[in-house]
Image (tube, rainbow, N blue to C red; front, side, top):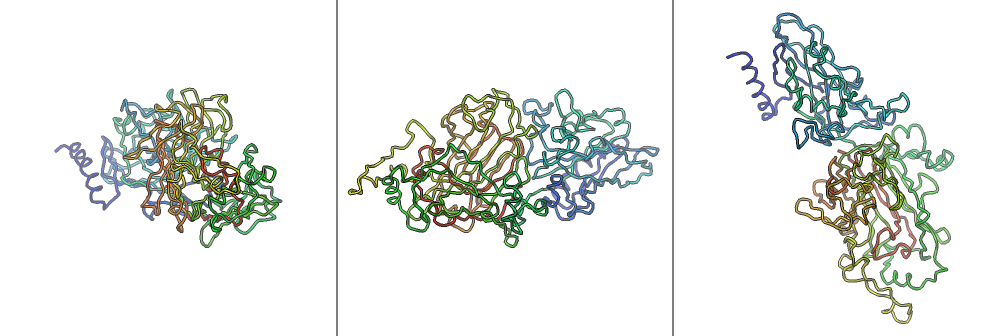
Length: 640
């Protein structure tokens, strides 16, 4: 049997053998005309299995790095493979390592033409040597002695792996502006003769991934696995048979940093604690900041002057109707929702329990307040499955009366600067600003993005011609309870014990999706139908609502909420355990523009103005001020 045929059969047979038996992650022998490669292992010094948790220790300085300096000695993966020179004289060979995130990527090949690169494949997170000008590395002379020789090198996975200038600040590469992604990473080894490299038979923009051609960046995975590089002579391409799974677990117990843009150092120092403040140690290690809401002054409420513990004082709908009906206008308290005047008092990080407690503080007569509270992560990411385990405040009491809170878990743009712009909108553009009316200009790209869980007491259905529900206002008649204590419509009482899990994507009204609509329309996912709503074609967000029992979500010691943000879709899930979650919202790139910029996660308890939620049964103005603190606990956040 000719040697070339024997090698071909070996290549075809061995990968299946290794994968099916699961006994080795070593690559099989692959032969070219002048050399053979085998036993490729890109992470030879990573001995802790195939899962790696991101190291937050140095992340504020340079963004995430894989592996971290505390995880592997020296902070680099050791790359190894074996090479046999089958020629007649010693030769020098050239090699290069590539990596790519496989969990959150576009396919390398265009679906309509498999010979072409997918138009978004350049967005995938891939890289090679940290120094992009280091193209192929030479092995040194390999003797023609019919033996395999071990070739070694080092590399690590870093942010902004193509060294794109948009992520630089002057001459400094701010790698954190394009942080590496969580999920599975694959590894690709390319070995060639030195002549192949020097003669540029491998294009310069594949050797140096920071270079572009006329169409843009060339994804090396496309080039070597499906494009012209697949048939190169004297070149061997091997894909590692395992993937490295990268998971982020920001620790709620690592402290809370107070951003100087929110509170001055003088203010922060007055109320700082060992686990909350502006100390340099907290700056480096804390995974969360105190979140300070923007309060729109136009959202002023005229609130009833009542303080009550709605959740525990047997506050009823009759109480609500009485207070709504019989307080005179001049007795009402004109306020907006507020934020903490001092940091660290309403957000507490516990390093022992590894939790964060957030609390909306109680109100006092003459010191009226409905204060919004929350925390925000400090390290931006693009895509990921964000799972929050938490015990947020209950929203309804045993009479199904609402306490006025909205529990929210949401992703928001890390920056609206040019470096964090979304993908271009090529059909009429995005609305230019988050705040702005229908006359706001349209632009090709924006930095704003937001994906929300907002959980509150509102109506479950899409707005329609029947909106709002036909509520009876009642009559000012203190002598006849039936005149002022009017019941809600039956359609509202049908969901009396339920709150609405509202799932929203702020797509900034980009018309590019093929099924972009306004109004109310169905979106199908598996066997479920979710009704999506957009007020008009200039409205910047698409929302779906699912009714769920308040006792289920917030009556137990914890519950799970998940935003699964992928390049082409968003899936919202909730459940009592991580393995028992159900879908409560779904949108894909056919109906909405999926953001591809870097975002942060926020967890809040806030007093929404119910004018934002047309048709709601209860008005925030007529909900009492809190008599006690409303407390929530964040127990765990996993991004994978």
